[in-house]
Length: 193
Image (tube, rainbow, N blue to C red; front, top):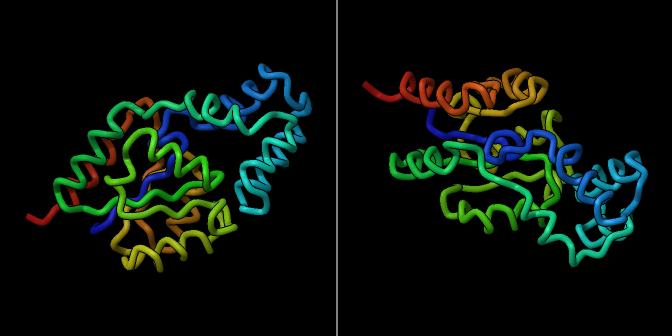
């Protein structure tokens, strides 16, 4: 393993299902669109880059000026910052591979000051492909410059882990209960003797 790849929602950030846990309640609380299906459809379009963040807010009947308030709900997972810092100190590049709205993902990385700890990011809203589509993993391989066999991928959704594994990427299913311990153990196993 020469490069670590982390999912954002549920791995770097605490919320595993940010749409159900954060976005829909936020929209309802602020008097936006009451239709869950419409919110989900708008989010899917934004997370595929078919519409921008401003258009998303318009489709759910809220002002884009509320975006900062929405993003303020996110929190880092316990141990995420330490892992990112430790990988940087060890000279191991870390990439983020996430299904998200491009602008939101960038702003969250900036808000939590983790952008400088990442070698790069592949975000569905920027590339127009969502996990578990194999093409997004190929984009990661091409962009990172590492072959599949040199990557360790961590995600909290089994279908995403399975899709990466099918391409020959060593993968770990993240669980909040065990946190980053399995990741650290795998990294120790991969370390040169």
